[in-house]
Image (cartoon, rainbow, N blue to C red; front, side, top):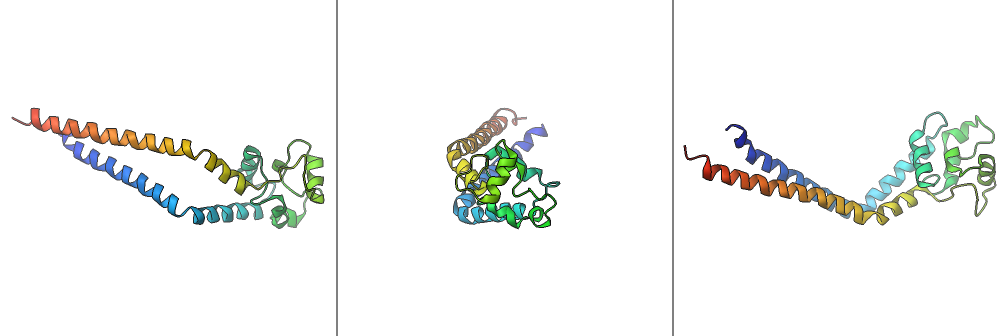
Length: 170
């Protein structure tokens, strides 16, 4: 019977988790602009610290979202890799290129207005657009998780009440 006495603790933990989820959702809604600024600052830092040998996370983001840099590809002129100039033909990472890397690098170097081989849109905008487009799905998933928590509270409360009504008469 010792395990049944843990039901109120389980219920309390579920309530705390649901309240934390609710608080996180409210915080995200209120602090959206600040979070966007922090995200931009972090992406810009990743761009500035970019080196060919050490930046698989930025390469992955750029390939996955078909974007380049934080706001645009010209930010790579401020990167460590561009400043050290190990490769004379390097202007942007290869992950900013669609298929023809040589043409892509040339387009970046010449700052072509509508490049055909270079992802010209910044990752900050593309990723924020992705979140806005998929926000209904993300909210639905969060709501579904919260519903399971609420169901857990309801069932644990019923079990706790039935335990006291039927089994504690000894």
